[in-house]
Length: 141
Image (tube, rainbow, N blue to C red; front, side):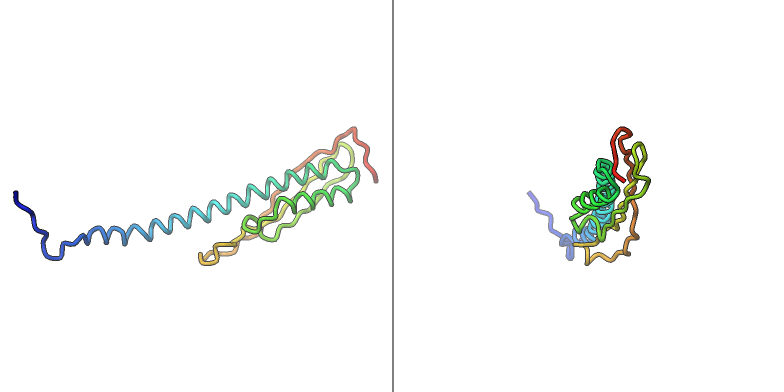
């Protein structure tokens, strides 16, 4: 049985070179996936908040209560600062039986927790949802 001797300088350098090339690529890929998932989560949360706020507003009896309900529901759903930075909720449309109202949620993707990753600030995006006021419901002026 003969043992093979390693040649001079053959101490696994190809493994180290492979890791030196693969590690930065894997880290970059992980950061890209994190940034993309943060944007998708932000969009989904803001759209869901707009839909819930529109439904809450359509169930009210007057425009003032509808605006308050939309603000309350929107604010309650957008409390996580890592999802939505500086959210705002707007109600528009005629408040009358059978009419369609809309609630628009404005939100930008937050960079909370990602301060070390260089990125450009995201422009605020708007998400709008619609709801119809029950045509047989009495509303107050």
